[in-house]
Image (cartoon, rainbow, N blue to C red):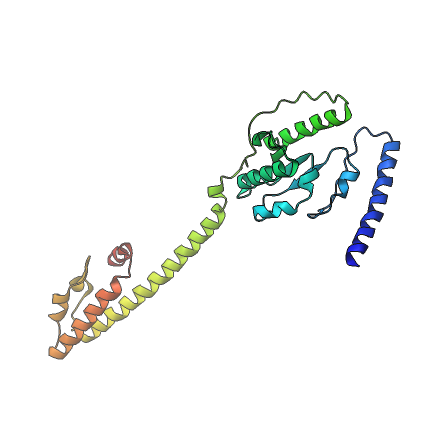
Length: 265
């Protein structure tokens, strides 16, 4: 029942399309371009209204076996694979050409001569679009016999996306913000390490003699262990100071050497 209702709806729509075309013909337009919405895989009614048919698709049709379900590849005079800058576009072009050759029994025609065109419609002066336009004009001349006097010359150039910003730099603003966030995180981490070192350092001063000074114990390599132990009051303090110095050296491994130089100076 659903299939019958759909067919009746298509017939009614086809009637309105024919009437619209008749109105345009009566107005004596030289060329009428009829565009459909997405027609799906099995709807080919458009060829009933057109002398020359162009099927537009994208490289993202899935597996190559899905092409067998696209009936328009049996009937279209020309096929455009738009968005040719997408990943896998060249593979899609090859698969569509093979399917078009099988569908139309064009075994005697070279693969490169199949009426399949890779295009990037969003790009000005795209070689693929220019080639497609020329072939449409040629096909109209072939079917209508009207000389359109198209002197357009076509190169062998293939559609290729022209970038204002190179692909490797498209995310450059994001990279800047990511670098800033990474720097901020690194600074915060270094602050935590420096605070731990300062806490251990203050504890060492509390345990050792009060006559101990920064100049006595700080060096480029860290703390002067021997100098610190010289100020220990007793063996218990000496053992504790050894533990503190060892912990200081362990934590200092996480401090950037440049930051240690800043602290020293």
